[in-house]
Length: 156
Image (cartoon, rainbow, N blue to C red; front, side, top):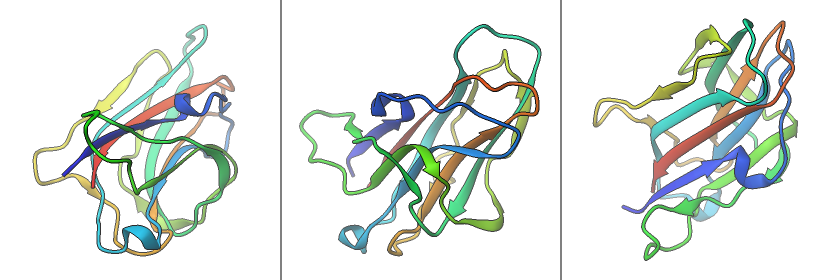
């Protein structure tokens, strides 16, 4: 199974967060991946800019549409692997449709903290093999409105 890395930093644009969730990165499948179920095995959330003492809520939720954003081509971790079939969309300007009560990684932390999530083997976040299904990596803050970043590693 090839492994890939995707980040909103790859898109060359930045996503400012606000008091409502803003999707930084969406990973989704298309009909081309109908028989594959990508598994997310590493996620890093963080901010850039001058740190202050603000709370940020990070989230990974299931989604049923892509939303609109900038394409962020996933990089194979092994350069000999083929291109990813999973679609990565970064810094969304139109939010995807997020499934209600589907938050998989909710975490409220101080802006100064970076979060890294690595699951126990076999307990990865799984994207279903359903057209346009995916996972949206989001952030919100009532006090911080600067740029936020997320990186996710997954395999197909």
